[in-house]
Length: 101
Image (cartoon, rainbow, N blue to C red; front, top):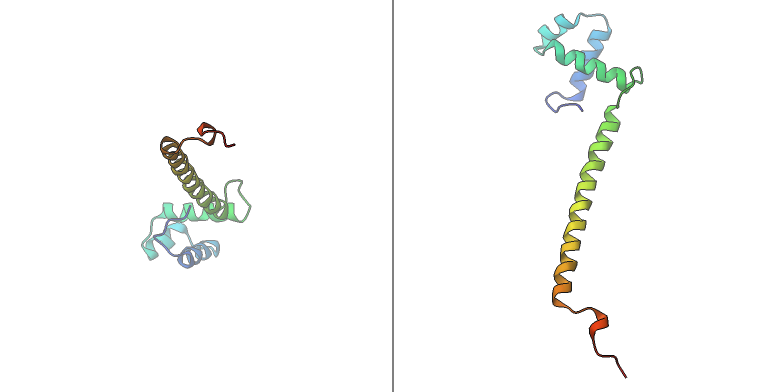
């Protein structure tokens, strides 16, 4: 998952410089970022382009959103279950009243 420290446009320009043939070391030095950062970006770019088999950035984002939503739904379910327990403790079930005539 990309960090938020550098905008996507900056990452793209860095990768374009490397793809154009400039050495990673030189680009890193000129722009004040680590070589490792560029290598990580390049690897993720290859994954996103389908050249390496891993989870793409879009898939990572979708998984993050889905997991967050699942957590929200689980919380809502737990709250609903607790509310039902509290209501049952106060209101008797329907079958416990006197039969009507």
